[in-house]
Length: 316
Image 1 (cartoon, rainbow, N blue to C red):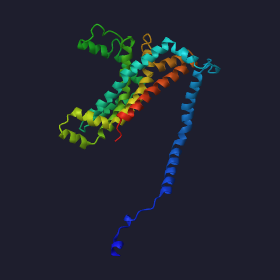
Image 2 (image 1 turned 135 degrees about the vertical axis):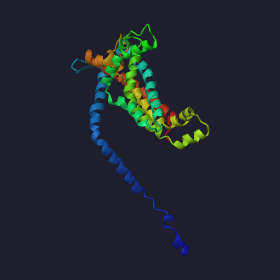
Image 3 (image 1 turned 180 degrees about the vertical axis):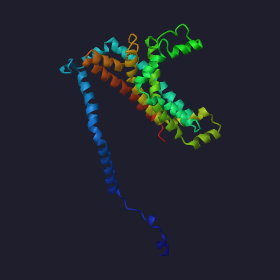
Image 4 (image 1 turned 60 degrees about the horizontal axis):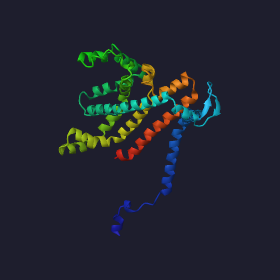
């Protein structure tokens, strides 16, 4: 009897509360939908409706007033892929993305690794790395226009170092070979601040005991970085890769401000081709078809990334 009286109440098995838990889960779901509800009309009006209208335009013949004349099916797509300007814009976009995305990932990652150790200069370095976030794209482009000019800082530095003496008098943004690579630099500089903050937060969340254990086992700094740090921050890297691929494939602002698609179409990207087709040539059918192609291209790249996510991203 005394033994029964001394047994703790917690040892008595509790009754299942399946109905209560289901009711609570249902309540949480409805609460989440209520928070999302105010933004749904804006998403429908400003995202899905324009996309649906663009898709309908891509299958139709549209006049200069934006009215559909007749349904033409896939004729717009056949016409688009037969245009040399579109093929050139597609190739330019892929070239730019191939040059831009690696730099847009590696640069903020290296800065995050440098700024991660807490020291007296950590806050100052973080502030310097985040300065590009406070400068608009238009201002950035105007600054780099002076940098890449014929009498700009880049030519002055090359002359000072004695490099490329025969070509330092060129205007880099007007050179068919160097115009597109020159646009990569202001794009990387503009987006480096935000990605640096994401990388820095991820690097500082890596458990220090793992790094200390690896160091005690004789692992070098780079071995710890590649074997421990990078796998543990892979979700952040995956997010940055996806966003920067979208930025690369949809780049247009530096082209509109600095090169206007020139010289000789060397910097005419897909989005700039859509702009010139729709707003300059008033060819809404062609611009809509190119827009759908740009969407499909971006979707394919992101789809491949998400297929790789299952093997390369660690969420533990």
